[in-house]
Image (cartoon, rainbow, N blue to C red):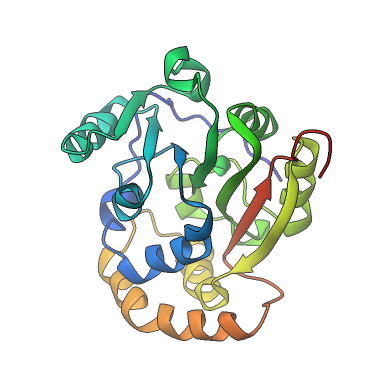
Length: 246
């Protein structure tokens, strides 16, 4: 099910970015899957406060961080001010100055972003247009519609994805899907209890930190050996076909 988002993209009032800012194991786990593709020119769509960007931008040649929310953008810009190879742009992708997009990118990163966009298919096509042939889209989204609860509503999620749905949308946007798999199987129960049973209206920063310290190493080790049939999130790597072929 897709829900119509009502959030103003120029202002983000979700409490999750601050509450979940310091989750080194979880963020490191996501980026471990993406690091082989984070090189050259990278664009991150929906960079927020820079919680993810600060962990990879020093390893790439250039980075463009795009964030529509004015209240987040000021902090993002301040965070990246000392890095001359990093540029920040406020707005949605179609509002970014053309000169910043004149050269195509080697990789695009969207971590917990696509689920906020009502027209996600159009967003995928816009990202594809700024990637070079052979470039990669690295995407991380919440999974399993049955988990949609109060915490999703709190941060204006339009949807949670099934694997087949995400694969189909990436393919329809012109990508070749190289990997699309469920992620964080042990995170299902805490999210289900918090959002569907207790109907919490606030993120538990201490609980998240505890899960990051104790739960993430366990599920990361498990999922390094097994392809789990479901998980709290989906992680995908998709490629723009090379000119004239796959």
